[in-house]
Structure formats: structure tokens, C-alpha cells
Amino acid sequence: MITPQEGKSSFSLFAVRQLLPRLRPHRRALSVAGVALVISAALGLAFPLIVRHLMDAAFEDRDASALNSIAILLLVVFAAQAVFNFLQVFLLSATAERVIAGLRTELFAHLLTLSPGFYAERSSGELTSRLASDCSTLQVVLSHQLAEFLRQILYLVGALTLLAILHTDLMVTTITVAPIVVLSAYAFGSILRAKSTRVQDELAESNATAEEAFTQIPIVQSFTREGWEEKRYGNRIARALKTAVQRALVRGLFFGMITFVAFGGIVVVLWKGGLLVLEGQITAGELVSFLLYAVSVAAAITALASLYSGYQEAMGAAKRVFDLLHLEPTIKEPRHSEALPPASDAGGLVFRDVWFRYGLDEPWVLRRLDLDIRPGEIVALVGPSGAGKSTLAALVPRFWDPTQGVITLRGADLRRIPLIELRTAVGIVPQEPLLFADTIYENIAYGRPEASSEEVMQAARFAHAHEFIQGLAGGYEAMVGERGIRLSGGQRQRIAIARIFLKEPEILILDEATSSLDTESEALVEEALETVMEGRTTLIIAHRLKTVQRADRVLVIDDGRILEQGTHSELVAEGGMYARLYRGQLLEPQADPAD
Ligand SMILES: Nc1ncnc2c1ncn2[C@@H]1O[C@H](COP(=O)(O)OP(=O)(O)OP(=O)(O)O)[C@@H](O)[C@H]1O
Ligand SMILES: [Mg+2]
Image 1 (cartoon, rainbow, N blue to C red):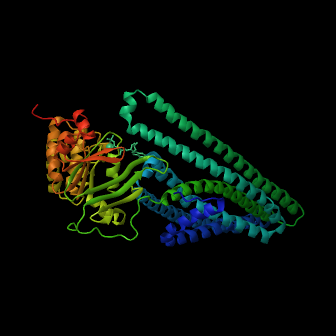
Image 2 (cartoon, helix red, strand yellow):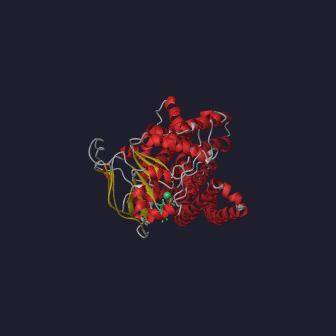
């Protein structure tokens, strides 16, 4: 669940507390940057003091050589400042890039641990937005805004202190504007944060729309719904735009007001300072230095105000990123894990009184399931669409946990087996196998990355994929395109089967693994599957008669229950639902390639 972070202060604190430990490893670079920042600010603050002497040398003393050396001193000051500015900007930006790169990787790694239920609720477009744009927002804060904030604070405090030392009257004048600025920054800041959060959310939504259209382009085009998709995307963008324009309006109002308040203060300083010059209380040089300090104060206040609004926006981004990062996976690693008992021990895959539903207010998908699969047994699941076959299969690698009841493997509760061990033991060829946008070779080797190229090719041969792979331009190095779109359905399936061959799981789950094969390759794949099933506990969701006939046991699932079980001939003899499925040809007869 998302950790609620109510209230502004606890919320900023939350983000800061998240960021601090991530900055700690970079403390050396950050300290150097901090020192450079302080020195650079001090040099900047020295500028009006030096200018004062320069002005006095010109106007009061009329001393050319003093003027020359002061000018040279100024140049040296700015050169030194340039070096420190370089150090600060470089070190901070590089550190921020590192921290954010780390955060992105961490977030990605965390997202990978979240269960399918999470992905059913979030679109991938939204998640990529979080990784891309929210993290970028944070990066700007760390690399630039934070340093700017510190610099402006230093300028503000330094200039006010110097003003106080040099002339209290003028300092009091400048300071009266401060409360106005602080209050309005606070008010505008929270509006800005709300608006920014909405803009980001709406952009994430439009990203999701675009991504969906891209991945489903054949459907979009075959239904000629390009215009509709364009409108859908356009509407989302228009919504984001509307909020963004409102945000721009608030920003503009805020900035306009702050600049007026700040620079209005300068006018007052100028006016009061002018009076003091007239009274002969201060020199022209002093007035100029006062003025420069007052400008520093005004500029610092303006900058701080806009930084504050930027900070509010960034906190929205930070919250979204860290909320995701703290999302607990519903499928957790066991706290006290047990190693999987050795294979020789009694017990295969056992379901004990398993009930399952996808959510609290969803209907039961599996009810009172009791099932005992012996090691090496081949069990075929048949039943009408929506009966719960794929759901039952998804419980084995713990994509979901049973709502009630337990599933054990070799006597150990699945929830107590380390996930990596469990999932190494279970291999799945899903209903619609997807491939990665990589080479054929890498897609097969995904099953066991350390496999030799000999083994990869051997697996391809077993899966009857070797021949067609060699026919492709590029062979094993041919790219399959995103999700494998450059291959036919049957070719994709054979790659997926080759991948499972390499993985050599103890338990094999085949979800209609031969459904999109042509007659000829179907026979080949049947053969291949026979080899891979040998000696493995296999759960095969079958629509084909031959698969069912070969199984040691057939389970007829209907409405989440096991309705009948037995061998093919037993079930036909029983004359129940299976017999009806069989006679009604709901089970496709095995196609014979000789036909
Ligand atoms: N992620 C999900 N969230 C909520 N309900 C789901 C989810 N996945 C499946 N269901 C529901 O669970 C029920 C069983 O689905 P399941 O995919 O297990 O059926 P199936 O037996 O594999 O069907 P088919 O033969 O068509 O593949 C269906 O009513 C479906 O609507
Ligand atoms: Mg299914």
C-alpha cells in the first residue's frame, strides 16, 4: 500500500529523509562543492565593498593608480570566483546525476519485484513516466536548485549582515519586505505543488495512452481508429495543458508580485540613501555599495521565492517516486525461509483446500481445490474458458498467493521457499509467449544465461526451432523486434519452448503452448514437448485431444472447481462434462500432418 504522507511538513521531511541517505556516499564531493559555494558567495559579497573603494577613488580621491589596482583586484576576485563556481557546479551536477541514476536503477529493480496484481492496476506508460520525468525533476533540484538555494541564502544573510554593519537604517528598510515575501511564497507554493502534481499525473496518463496505441498498432490501424486514438491522446494532453497553463498563471502572478516587492524595496533604499548623501552622512561610494547589497537582497529574495515554488513541485515528484519505492510487494520473500527439501523426499505439488479470488470484492475464481500431483506426473487441465485454469497455474510460481489454503512443493509451503528457488524450479510457457527486443540467441539464452552456445542451439533443435532460425537473415543473431513481432506466432512459441528447455525446470507449466502452431510445426512441437516433459512434473492446460490422451490424469475444471478427474478413457466412460466436451469437439482432435 502507498504510505500516506499527510501534511506538508511531514511530507517534505519524508522526501528529505529519503534523499539524505542517498547523498551520504557522496559526502566528500558534496563538502568540496559546499566549501566552493561558500567561498564563491563570499567573493560575490566582497564585490560591493571593493566597488565602494573604486567609486571613492574615482569621485572623492581622484587617485588613478588606486583605481587601477582596485580594478585589477576586482578582476582577480572574479577569476577566483569563476574557479569556485566551476568546482561547485561540476561537483554538484555530477553528484546529482549519480544519485538519480542510482535512484532510477533502484526504483526499476524494486518495480520488478512487484507482483502481477500491481501491474494489472498500473499502466507501463505511467511507470516509465515515473522513472523518466519524475526522476529528472528531482535531478534538477539536486544539481541546480539546492545549490542556488544555499547560494541565495548566503547572499541574503551576508548582504543583510553587511548592511546592518554599514548602516542600520537601510537594513531595516530592506527587511520590512521579508514577511510579505515569505507569506506569499508559502501560499503560492502549495498551490503550485498541487498544480504540478496534477500536470505530472495527466502527462503520465497521456504517456500511457500513447504507449498503448504504439504496442497495439495493428489493432488501431485495422479498426482504422487512428483518429480516435489521436483524439484520446489529444484530450489527455489538452487536460494536462489546461492545468499547466493554470500553473503558469500562478507562477507568473507569484513572480511578478515578488519582483515588485523586492525591487520596490530597492527604490526605498535608493531614496533613503540619496537623502543620506545629501545630508553628507555617507559618500557616493557608500551609497553604491548599499545599493548593490540591496540589489543582492532583492535578487536573493526573488530567487528564493521562485526556488521555493520549484521545490514544492519537486516534492510532488519526490513523493511519487518514493511512494513507488516503498510499495510493498504482495508476494514477499519468506522471512524465515526453508530450503526446498530434496527431491527424494515424499510429496510433489499439493494443493490443500485452496481458495482464490483476485481481490476482496471479486468473485471466487478457485474454490476448495484439493489436488495432489506426484513428481513426474503429467496432469492435463481442461475446461471452459474462464474456468480458472490459467489462474490455477499462476499460483504455482507464486504470481499470486492463495486467498485461503496452502500449496506445498515436496512438503514445503510455497510461501516459505525462497522465491528464487521456487521460480527456478517452475518453468512456464504462457498462453501468449512474448519475447524481448533482442536477438533470437539472447531470447533463448534468457532461460539460462550461463548456457554455452552449443546448449542454446541444442535447445533450439529440441524445440524444432533450429531450422527456421537458420533460414532467417542473420540466423541466431536476427533481431526479433519488440515483443517478438518479427516472428510468427508458432515461431515465437518454439523460441519460448527452447527457452524452457534451457531452464530445465522441475515443474513445467504449459498454458496451451501449442495453440498458435500450424499443423506441421504442431506435430514437431508436440514431439519436442514430449522430450521436455519427460521426468518432469507437468501441468498442461490443454485444448487438444492428443495432449489430453497422453496425460497421466485429466482434471476437468469448471467454475473454479475440479469437476471430474481421471484418465481420458475413464472420463469418457463416466459420461460427464468431459464426455460432453469430447463429443462436442470442444477438444480439438490432433491434426495429422499427413492429411
Ligand atoms: N488479473 C485478474 N484480475 C481479476 N480477475 C481476473 C484476472 N485474471 C483473470 N481473472 C478472472 O478469473 C477468471 C478465470 O480466469 P482464467 O484466466 O484463469 O481462465 P482460464 O480457465 O485460463 O480461461 P481460458 O481457457 O480462456 O484461458 C475469469 O473469470 C477472469 O475474468
Ligand atoms: Mg487461460
